[in-house]
Length: 253
Image (tube, rainbow, N blue to C red; front, side, top):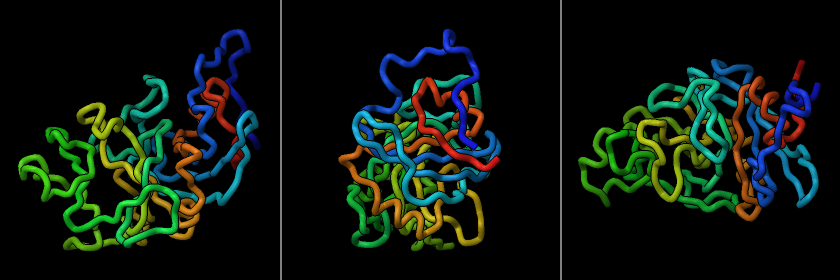
């Protein structure tokens, strides 16, 4: 079936003065979960040309989300108060609309047009809310030790004591982040798209994809298309499809 718009009558539903998804955005990655508590979802890709509706493209697949589900994050969307709110350490993936700003990984280069940063053993995303570097990915050698102490998010997990390769390739999801720094202390940090864990472990708040799917997504994304990422429970997608002018989304049912 196709997700329908809001069930309200036409005279009670108002479109935003400015579209939530900017007209300049021509690539949209969408993940829909069953409910706020779901730790997995379905991913879709959409593209459009100026003045034309969204068209589904690329692969559709299951993804892993936060081990405790999802909660409203801080992104490009209007603030929402009708559901859980993302907090540091809650194990929830941030819901809403976010910029996909750059790619990262362990290799010297990836096949992608996105800006790319190869990570080293000294690169950490700072998840300590009291740090002035909160929610920033930095080379810890370049800053005072007390600013980076306690961070639990090394960007080269393959080099730590219990290594895994989920950060071999990934994308930055700009939750709670703008102008190079966090927008709100304690509202969640270090949110990425990355590889699924081979043991099926869910994430601490990221979106995890199968290797082939993430590779294809990295090849598809183009900075000139201003790509965005949208994550919503299906009930919120239905509620917001008309006011946010979201694409029609086929779901099993």
